[in-house]
Image (cartoon, rainbow, N blue to C red; front, side):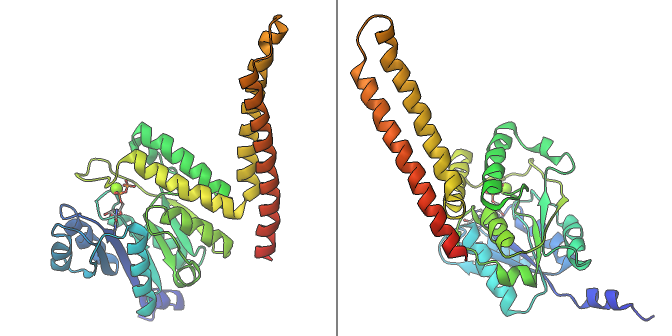
Length: 302
Ligand SMILES: Nc1nc2c(ncn2[C@@H]2O[C@H](COP(=O)(O)OP(=O)(O)O)[C@@H](O)[C@H]2O)c(=O)[nH]1
Ligand SMILES: [Mg+2]
C-alpha cells in the first residue's frame, strides 16, 4: 500500500514525551509505560531523593538527572535542549504525578499534525473537567488565568502542564522561568513570537497520591509574582495604572476620614489628612512611572 504524502510525513515525525519529575516514584512507572506508546520518553529527574530515576529507566524512559532540585521550568528547559539537539519534530510535556492521561496525547498532537497550531495546550475548562478542580484551586487559577491574559492577551488554561509543540514553537520560545511560572512564561513568549496556539479539552485527576508538590498558597503567590513582573515588562501602563488607582482610592478614603469630623463641627483629623496627601503623591508618581515605562517598553519592542 502506498501511503499518501500526509500519512508518510506523519510516520516520519519524531515525537518526544518530556516528563519533568520530582519525587514521583509512586506514579512515574505507569506514566512512562503509557506514554511510550506515543513516542520516545524522556524523564528529567530534578534532584529527586526517591527512586524516580530508577523506575523511569526500568519502565523504558531515557533519564536526565539534575544533581540538585532546580524547579519545573529548569527541568523543562533541559528537556527542550535535548529535543532540539536530537532533532525531534514534536515535544509533548506531561506531568509525572498521574494527573494527566497519556492516552490523550493524540488529542494534543492532532492540531499540530494537521498544521493548524504550533503550540497546543490541554485545557481543563473546555469539557467540564474543571469540576474536578477543588474550589480553592479554581479561585487561584482564575487569578492566574486573568493575570496571564493581562500579560499575553490570551485567555487559556495557563497553568496546564499537558502541552504539545512543534519544532517552530520549540525553537522560538526562549524561556526564562525556572519554576512553575514556566507555563505562563511559555504562553506569553509564544504569543509574542506569533506562534499559533490552540487549546484542546483534556481530563485531569485529583485522586492521585501525590498531586501537588508545593503548598497551594506559596505555589500560587510565587506564580502570581512572576506574572505581575511579566505584565510589568510588557504592559507597564496597565500594572502601574492599577497601582496608581489603588493609591488614589486609599487617598480618597483617608481624605473622607480626615474631613468627616470637620463637617460635624469638629477639627480636621491631621494624621488622616497627611496620609491622604502621601497617597495622592504616591498615586501621581506611580502613574508617571507607568507612562515612562510604557514609552520605554514601546521603544524596546520597536
Ligand atoms: N523537574 C521538576 N519537576 C517538578 C518540580 N516540581 C514539580 N515538578 C513536576 O511538575 C509536575 C507538576 O507539579 P505539581 O506539583 O503536581 O503541580 P500542580 O499539580 O500544578 O500542583 C509534576 O510532574 C511534578 O513532578 C521540580 O522542582 N522539578
Ligand atoms: Mg500535580
